Length: 264
Image (cartoon, rainbow, N blue to C red):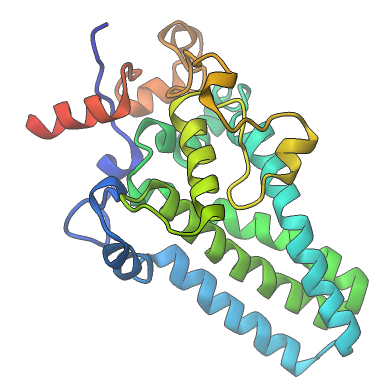
């Protein structure tokens, strides 16, 4: 099959780095350096400090604050699972011109170029409202203003943790901890074997509950849409918005496409 090379968000935009950061060609030290230079991560850290400051200014009682933190941590994997499965892997966003660019940026590009660090991190205009909506109301119900502030801080910090482990899963690095190896194996299967399962990042409880978990690629047939999420050349003829933004519809394995593009 002839391979098509298309523009991803990383190729089309200017990065803070002078070189592209591909996690499959980086070690753990490289990741630590790049991770704490990325604007989204710095923004999460800064806003978490602000949120903790707001909690200190108008704190909720200790028991309520701890409850808000615990609930924010517990609800996070469910929110991520729902968003990843029914929004990021949706087949409705590309049908609307005003949503196509968002869908392309927040997930299509990541599956087209899974190891590119600049694409892996979520866009702030989509992640920040989501974090706020998922955590602040719960915190408010538990502990008022202080509860909302500390729950929001928890959501921001949890996002940093999730993003770091997401990087580890794409990094040219073999973890020593068995639970990290498990996470990496499952996530790589999601990207390179069957995208309709293993939607979690650090927590796969909801995958197990909703029967979307698989540990061995032999348990499932290889998905023909694992790299394009169902946005095929045939679909693009009807809904061309993502293809117009990308310069076409990519085909073939991401590694082969990226290597070919680098030789040009």
